[in-house]
Amino acid sequence: MTEVTATYTLPGREISAQGLRAYPELSGAPSKGVDAISGGTGKYAGVRGEVHVEPRGTKVFITYHLIG
Image 1 (cartoon, rainbow, N blue to C red):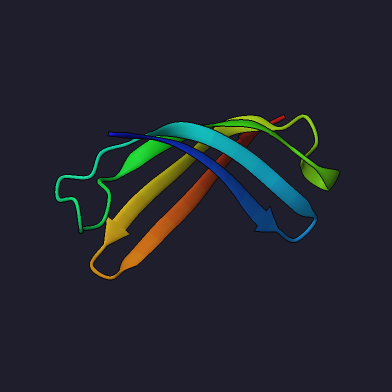
Image 2 (cartoon, rainbow, N blue to C red; image 1 turned 90 degrees about the horizontal axis):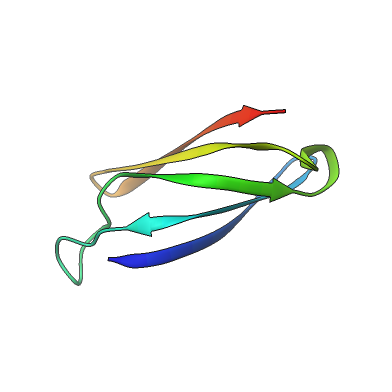
């Protein structure tokens, strides 16, 4: 398990998120997870919600669920 703090740069500025990520194998991809959005800048100032992270093969799919 690791604690994750991430900053996602999107058109219109940035979103910050925090959460936990499990690594079933030390050299492999993390398991899928959900991180809490703690805020943002620019057009995302004051936003809340979740970031869903799902590894699929060699790719990682990231989906944002924004509130506010």
